[in-house]
Image (cartoon, rainbow, N blue to C red; front, top):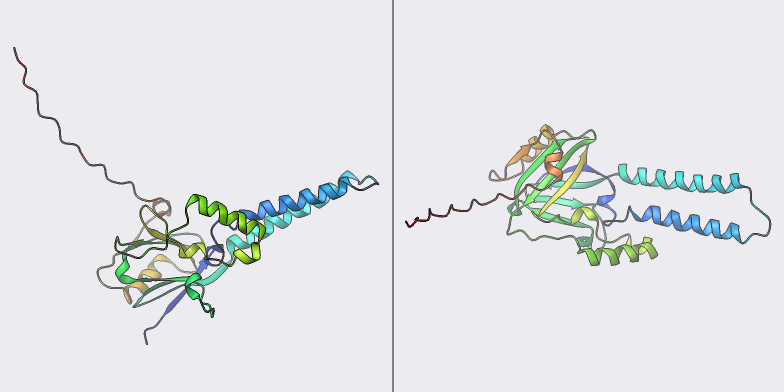
Length: 227
């Protein structure tokens, strides 16, 4: 049986859907509004310092929750000679909703850049690859509205890590506790020889897609001047 290498993925993308993190300030804002509305209906006046203390506590709780979700780690990156798996292993009946398998035949190249927590990895897909794309703007807005009302129900949907970015199709993964040279050594033992692995000096080169090459237009032939 082929050996499987597992790495830690940083952030909430390995477990939570896209946009889930931005709903936390909205929930705490609604909670603060309900508190303020309840204080307004009280017959006896409430000290200003007590209202400020409650709002400050909710603000601190929101910041702590966002900080924890931004730095959480999960074993959501696995690789062997058959390809790469993105997502957390699960015993559910429908694991395809929680993870995605990328065969080596669907990968055109792999790039990585060092980061303070580990590295930023880019998996570029070939044109013939089967891609699980991100939802459109309208569908994403409806999903966020539904997650706002039912956070624990729809919050267990397809993780953002398993949906590829478009133009060009690729995945961006933040790996922890591993250096680019170490990961390149691991990939060299499992990947085919026709899949290149490159190391960039800065992560900014991976965060944005490369600019398309502009085709040079042929110069028009010189017009003849009639006397």
